[in-house]
Length: 343
Image (cartoon, rainbow, N blue to C red):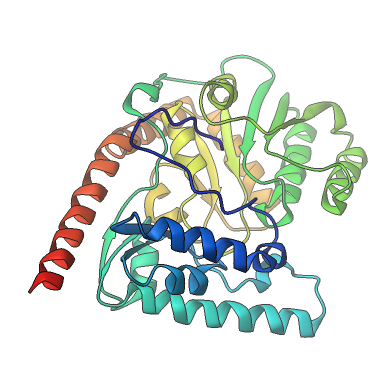
């Protein structure tokens, strides 16, 4: 787990590793058994969706309240763009069936979503409340007035090291920035495997553009001090997601909370919150990313205004008020269900 939980009223129910969808589906009997056993002791379950396990969870926990937490949209096929047509068709069919169960779970009950766009996309699926999925405590917000005042300028990406995160375009942008005479470097923070074909292609792109010495693969950093140190060392945060099924990435809140100006793509729920805070660019546009970084470097007043706007945005959505509001709503739901069952 990324986050260490020390609360005495929290216990873990193991459902196995978070690996590929086929591997998780192979463990259906074990997962069903664990869920049914846990449901005997629960009044409600918070179901983070989308997940390939939605139908399974709904069947195994039908005796208790299920509260969906919607954090993104997906049809599955965008994650495997080079697959053969029949595999893409099967994946789309799987996620469409999953979406039917997801809509059923949200119909006529309390649900949460982490962006206005996701709420609009869900339509009339019950009572959907906006909940910012932020994993930052108020004490972890770290304000600074400015960045980019020393060289090299440190660009930072945090997240999965995967093609759909736009890392090729970020690297291409870095090449353009360096070619224009700037002294910039890039830290990539996220787990990866050297044998991954995408890692090979990314390293080859670095070699072609003579950027190998300017890009550091930092690996996974656990939530907390280890991760936050990367934010504190950085000058600009960059995310280049290409999938329109992105929700609002947690890492953007983390970047705001550490005083970083942000460059982000206009996909998913990102514009809902980041418009007016980040420099927004079209997806798959290395030149757009490079130009946005150039504006941040060249305009100190703009840069400082972005930092201040991000700080104001994140200060009101830290973990404590979000968790408090969520739990109040869940308690009301459980009380209503209990009263209805006794009636």
